[in-house]
Image (cartoon, rainbow, N blue to C red; front, side):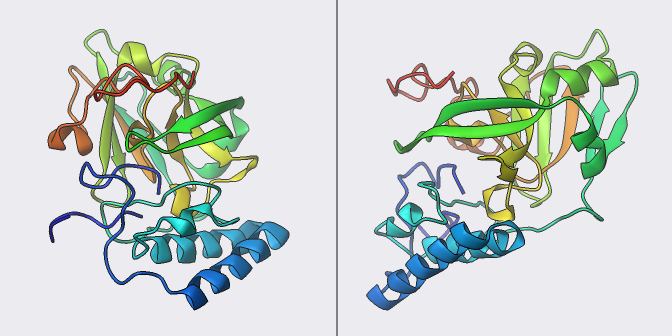
Length: 254
């Protein structure tokens, strides 16, 4: 990786390379300490787990071995971010805006999203760099339900997703977004999505490589054409079906 490559910090690729971090290797004492933190997070959960995930993500950024991604708190995920930090929003300051080519633009608080019908999916998570986490549960609002509530105008053909880290973006066609396995996810493995994993709300595109499941989701804009997302500008496929894109032949996840 060159100096312009973002640190790997929560489930998406970094610079087109595998889950190799950069920086000083993590020492044995740090790894043992993180094992203790991971076990503590499993035992305590909730807000404590959120803080521990953030610590794990920061450690993973400097861990070329990938071992911290396998700790109890890490859940088998590799942590990546393109902004070199983990943004935090919560009950009081989180908002999701749905706008663009719609009849009824809307802004949702966390309580609004929780009040809508919830869908739970259990699928494998597949990263384009090769790692896979089996049987991961995501729950949230079907993307199609938010689109129906907003009333997509006839010229609306695609969705552009903006994230509150200020950097990451993604896209789907309208047909892709209306699939029943596309969620605006509020929980992961039946707990609130932590900040390190893209919470409090992230996109979950079950049949696609995980870079399409944008973390820290803040805005959904209906557009008249696909606007390429962050990683597509670096050569990743826009239509990122698992096993049918990016030159990979992984087993499907949905």
